[in-house]
Image (cartoon, rainbow, N blue to C red; front, side, top):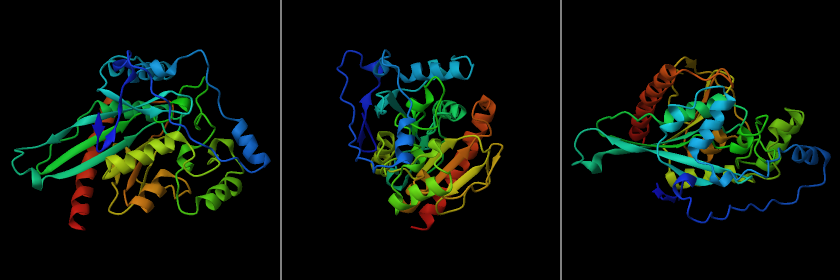
Length: 322
């Protein structure tokens, strides 16, 4: 299946008879000999070898997450949209995407005049933010609104960091012990990312940016999506700061649901810094107030409605300035 120029493999549950493709390989440069790097790398979680992660579907992953959150898996996990395998994690867990059908109001006769607005939604970038993954799954079951003259395409990657998410004790980092939201290739990453890690976090293993920029396969998947799907905006779901953060041009939303705008700053290697500065694509970060307590279905729908009210305003602003 092709999504915005990107060819995706069928989901595991839809291709059980096919041979599993080889996992993307990443050649990691040898790290300089240093205790901090060695200590950070040594902290990476290990995957139980007896589990065949490649056979897990998005519904299976949803059910695992529901158990971690002590929630019923039905109806959400049994009513997911058709998923496609975006690729593998470092530990060869499947990473899935779900694309919402395009919604166009009115006649398509004037298709040339219809603005194509693409929204990329990412959840569970940090594996210990369980509520973020759950909200991403809730949202993927919702349709974008129909707006005259606008075609909305929404691509969801609800569980970007399954290796961190599905450890016995969920981990912020991925299977290599890297904080994915510090691994994007922002300007002067090699100096700034390590400087920030050493001086600001005091070598906090949970915030290790990795050996090199974009060293992680999960980071590379997102970079590929930005290149091929060409989103108008990116929405990244996190927890537990309970605020909205915004990187990019145009006016950010004042609130999404009960969460209000309050900037948390710019970090080397972050998705917001990378996307907004390198590609000119704004990133709205939705920080839920609790990493282990999910928002209600009613609140999730309210947030979805508020999100697209802002996306519409942003798209109008973007069109007017081009």
